[in-house]
Amino acid sequence: MNFPSRDIQKLLLIQPPFTLLRDEAKGCQVPLGLGYLAAVMKPRLQVHILDAVVEGYATEVKVDSERFTYGLTDQEIRAALSGYAPDLVGVSCLFSTQWRNAHRICQLAKEVNPETLTVMGGAHPSAAPMQTLVDQNVDFVVTGEGEQVFPQLVEAVRTGQPISDVAGIAYRDGSGVKINSRKSFIEDLDALPFPARHLLPMSKYFTIDRPHGTMSRFSPNTSMITSRGCPAHCVFCSIQGVWGRTFRARSAENVLAELELLVRDYGVREVHFEDDNLTYDQMRARQIFDGMVERGLHLAWTAPNGLAIHTLNDQLLEAMKASGCYRLHLAVESGDPEVLQRIIRKPLRLEKVPQIVASAKRLGLEVDAFFVIGLPGETRDQIRRTFEYADRLQADHVAFYIATPYPGTDLEALCRAQGYISPNLAFDDLRVRRGNIATPEFTGAELERMIASWELRLTARQVFEPRMFFERVIMRAWRDPRWAIGHGARFARQWLRGLRWFWQFAR
Image (cartoon, rainbow, N blue to C red; front, side, top):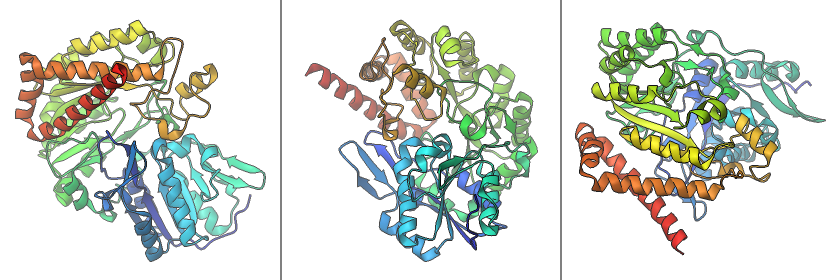
């Protein structure tokens, strides 16, 4: 198909407002994906980034009794569109729960100027291009890595070349939606420019200070990413739809150069590595950590997406501590080995986890552990064993989530094939605190009650058992006063969830 050529000169990249449940904490992170895309497109076009979240962080609008949206209002976004008058609008949609906000941006762009071309990218449209293009306000979907696909799309539109020749896009033609398969992923990540942070209001992110996980030790802090792709085959993971299953990494030298830039140009004191596999290549990881010490960067850091536990050992933990790591986020997932290996398909031996936790705590590192329950094939006994395993683990904080059938995942395909989710399940309901899967073993509501009951019991223990209260609350608050503020809010949310469940059950 040939798309009529357009004179594309001005590109506006938009991070839409965000919608949350009333008991979820607001966040505000630099949109790294848009930053990378802006850096790649800057030599070709006039580029501007509008992050509606940071620009309108204080503005909250009630959606219904359960949800609220924060960020710039429609009127403010229209004004930005009118003032900049872009030829092309690129909209980020990282999460399926935010699809309405992303589509709303495309609608506003068309209302301001029907001739504006709209492109949507991110994890959600990459996994659900057919559903995304049902909306006539969306002209194109970029699947996978935008830095590779987006320039080719713009060039095809500018010159009138066949759109069907552009790999990695989806679009409509006279016969319906067409999806062009992706041919490859970016192998040389060092060839990418650093994210165009100079196009973003960095001082506002620093002032708001609500990073991934909502807690930090020092400010200013910011996020960065050093690798892409995950070779694991976890049943619930959606990131392979964007970055694939092959691990690709930036060189240690390239990573260190960006860290030096963050310190020099922005005064950053803490970094959050958003990798899915920061330590997968242990030699590269060690080069990064040793380089941070050798260059005297004096950065605190953590990896809130989680670390692959099977890659960790005492020597690597020592290097991490020396380079400024202060907290480990461990994605354990389950306390039952059969669930880990047969159902989740995660390459982890459970007996290693307590060893890593003990080693980390000897070094003075804090440890957060994450678990997932409610997978098809999982029994009530296995869920109970996971709760018991978490209780014994001696982590500083433990969080439980409910398995969520995100679009494009093996879990979604399995659940649909077995009839474990409603055929009318809405993207808005795909939240890790919501039980949307019902199997012969459990219902979604029962999973929610299990977690609420466990959280209520754990919170009570942390308050009323002197040793646990001292170790997990007093000592951690002493080491990190900023943590105490954020954790107090988390305690309150856990209690409210548990008490709400108890009240419903009592009635």
